[in-house]
Length: 475
Image (cartoon, rainbow, N blue to C red; front, side):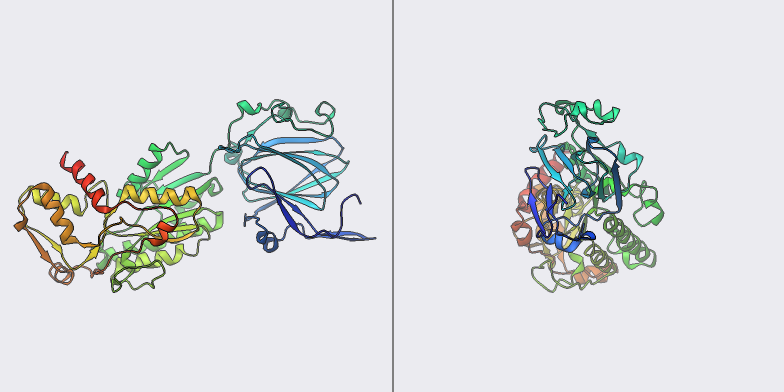
C-alpha cells in the first residue's frame, strides 16, 4: 500500500475557512486494512462541526485521469477514499473575503476532508478503480440543485496544478463550459423564515433586513403560515433554510385567562413553538425565539437568564413552556424581553391618545422595568447571528433607569404638554381586581450583562423613547 498505516487521528486547518483535512488511523495486516472513516465524537473533539449527515454517496472512477468539478453545493460534505487516490482542488465560492481562495491536496484511504457548504469541490482520479465516498447533510432535490454554483477547472486565475493535464483527462461536457472565477456566482446563503411578520417586532425585523439588503428572507403571519398547524410544515424543503425567527406569539395577557383565550395561548405559544423546535432540530436550523419577563413571578429585582420559571398567569405559563421546548434545540437564541414598544398600538401610543384628548389615564406605580424598542431588539437578533455568539438565552431590553409604568406615562404626558392631574397612579393588584385581569409580575427588570458581554449594548430606553415620541407627535 502506498499510504501510511497507524497514523494518529489529527486535523489540519487550511487557508479556506472551515475546510478541514483529517489524517485517519488505518490498521492493516496481510489480510487488508481497517479504519474508522468517520467518528463523530473524536472528530468533533478536533473541531469537526456536528454536521448531521443524512446521505452517503459513492463515486466509482474506472480509469486514471477522470476529473470532476468544480461544483459548490448547498450542503456540507465529508469526503474520504475507499480505494485508490485522488488529487483534490477546493475553491471558496461563498461571498466574502475568502471568495476565490484555492486549496489542493492528495487524498488516499488514510486522509479525509470536510468541505463546508459553498466551497467548490473537484478531484482527479490518480489510479484506476478509485472509489470516492462522501457524507452530506441534506437530501438532494430539484430546489437544492437550483442553488449550485460552479467555476471552470481550467481557470488560469485559480492556477490549479493538475497532475494529469486537463486536455488528457476525462471530463464531462458540462464541466468544460463552467464560468471562470470572475463570472462565477457566489453561493447564496441559506434562507431565513420569519414568523409574526405583521407584529411590532416582525415589522422591525423586516425593516432591518431591507435596510441592510439581506437576501433570501421569507415572511409569514398566521394568514399564510399558522405555526400551530402541523400540516403547514409539510411539503417544504427545510434543508434550504438556515434560520427561523419566531416573532409570533399570543400576547393577550388578560384574555389568556378566559377559556377560549387559554386554548389559543397554548396553541400558539406551546404547540406552535414545539413544531418549530422539532423542525429546527431535525434540519439543524438556528431558531431565534422571543420570550417574556412574564415567565417569572417578579419577586427578584433583576432577573437573570438562569432564574427558574415561576409564572403568575396563563400567558406566562405558555411562554415558559415554549421556552423549555426551545432550550432543547441545539442551535437556538432565546431573547427574553419586556415592555415592548414599536410600530402599532402600544402603551405609549395609548397614553399619547389619552393625553391629547384630555382624558383620565391610569398606570401602575408598583410595577418596574425598562422599555424595549423593536428596532433595538432586531439589532440584537442580527448581532447574535452575525457574530456567531454562543447559543442560549439572552435578556434584551433597553438599558438605563428602572422605572414604573406610571413614570413612563408621566414622561409621555409631559412631552405632549398635557395636564398631569389627569394621570393617576394605581397598583398591579388594584388593576387586576377592578378589571378581572391577570396577575402581573411587579419586577420586570432584566439583567443585560450576558448580552453586553456578547458585544451588544442596548440603547438607553429614555433616548429611544424621546426619538419615538418625536416621530409619533409629528404625525
